[in-house]
Length: 251
Image 1 (spheres, rainbow, N blue to C red):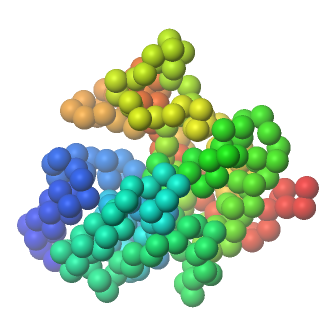
Image 2 (tube, rainbow, N blue to C red):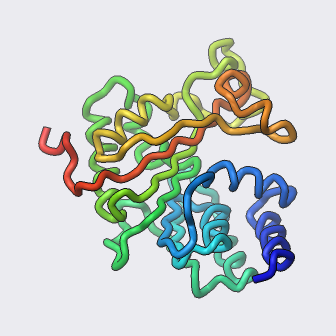
């Protein structure tokens, strides 16, 4: 595919998945997947929504992409149909599959996933548990079980990308609704370190934590302080352990 044709497809994809410009889509995608090889990989996008990152993976060379969207527990009605239409519009039917499943319903794949994306979905896997995850061992165990099951579906040393809003935010502390994140229920989110601890117990290895950039000043805004004042949005990246058994399994 020529560079011009690739950019045309990326621009169309950006509009179809809800980005106002190709530049915004490309800036966010480059940030999320920085340093991660997508060519010839098997990718899972959990809670794919309109399919932004499933489509991104396919357009960047992924061999096979599965996007799951149950249209419940935090999803929006009609998003799976929208995702299917985007797949068809971009002629990606041979590379991308849309499935109406919850994560725990996903069968063991014939080929393990090399990259798994959880973009703004980790808190919806168990909303009852996530509220008390920072202080309740039973809630931790519920999440660890879910994530251990996911790890069994991944290639050893495979990438896991987790994006979400942190619980700490300046507007919450002031008792006000953030004008930058009006729909966020902060109590249904957790800070990055809490997630790191849970993922490590499930057999994942922490790689990096980065705070999301804001347009139109991405270089100036990709830090904790600006996010604390706005959306508290972060991207956490981990890798599946080489061993299929967690060091905490059986505790």
